[in-house]
Image (cartoon, rainbow, N blue to C red):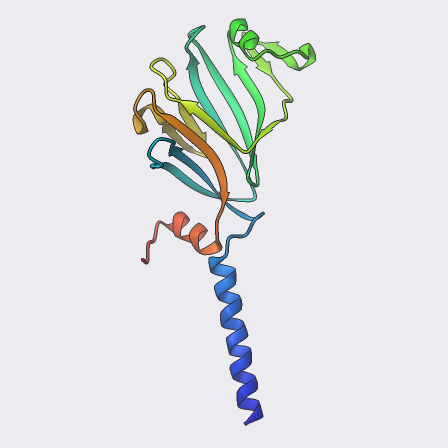
Amino acid sequence: MLRNKSRKCIFFVIVITVIIFLFVPWHGFFFNLKITQINNNKELINQPFILHHSFSILYINSIYLAPVVEKYRIEGTLIVLREINTKSWGVVEYYNIIDANIIKKENGEICICDLNYTQPNISMIIGYVGKHKITFGKQIYSLSLLADVGEKVKIESVPISVFQYLQKKTKLYFF
């Protein structure tokens, strides 16, 4: 009788542990790059990842009509701007970089390197000229096709559970 209760208790503990493991977000391990329209909270992009991941925002600067690539690294729920690449000195001036040591020029490209600007999210407006694109791994998403011009979008990294991670990675939806 005591042995039977012991087995039931162990089984119960195992079931609870599995449920917690699968359905509780793991702050620090499983994350989702989420891009939403601010005005209606419509999700445009959901990309799950583990620990850290890099992505880039590509656009045309509307003042100088020059291409710009901003390179970011996601560290948990924080987004860190690491580098900006362009061909226009006007764009460099636009970013108001004070430290000239981090600005490098090679083969016509200007790189504002070794940045460490950390933020919890990025908010931006989809412009007429910008043609904003996001690269995440091998995927390229055109924000100007996903959201209307003038729409505000928010880019953020949110913790997710193992179940949500597996669901998004395999694109299986059980309920």
